Every structure is written in C-alpha cells, then in structure tokens.
Image (cartoon, rainbow, N blue to C red):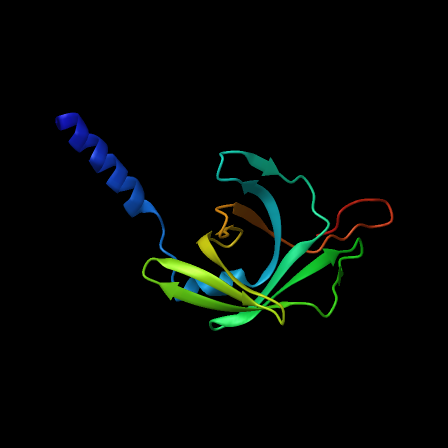
Length: 146
C-alpha cells in the first residue's frame, strides 16, 4: 500500500509540474516555426533535419492567421495568398487553435509553448514539435550571417 501511495504521489508531482499555458503566452506563437519532430500515437517518431516550409503565425489577442512560407537563401520568405484564420480558445486547462478556411474547419491543441519551442497535437493524436526559426541568410562564400 505504501508503494502505491508513493507512485501516486510521484505521478501527481509530474502532472502538477506541467506548465499551464496562459493568455500571456499566446504572443509567443508569433513568428516562424519549423517542425523538428512528429510523434505518432503508435509510439513512432519522425525527425525532420531540414524543412522546405515553415509555419508563420501572426496572432493579435485571440485571433490571427497561420501561413505556410518558404525560406530563401537571401533571408526573405516566399508565400502565396493562402492562409488559415486562427482563433485561440481556452477550455479548462487546455488551449485550442481553431483554424478555418473557405473550405474547411479544424482544431489542434496547443500542448506547450516557450520562446523557442512549441508542441501542437492534432485530432489524430499526432504531436508536432516545433522550434522557432528565423531567416536563412547565406553570403556568397556560403557563410551563415547573423
């Protein structure tokens, strides 16, 4: 019985240490994000070494847009007129990103976010782990600029 209580206490400790996402954290979504890894519900992971496309978020308050962009070697980004409208929704201890286009509506859960990492889970229980990205800017000699 003592061991069961110890295990229960440790589990509660892990759950309580998980950082809750607040409305103030939503501003961290703004910017360019690159997928690092996708975790599937079967326990498999797919790692991405390099991506051709980034996700760009621009959120003001609880709504904004998400757009796919393609980084260029000169530090700019290519994009088209397509984007998804995003609304941020708080339900108890969960935060959802509700997307809509002229053709579809869907939601994803914002599991965690920091200044340089975030995790989003879709309705198929795939977890997308992102890292904050910036422009890629290579000089003629191939050196990366800051």
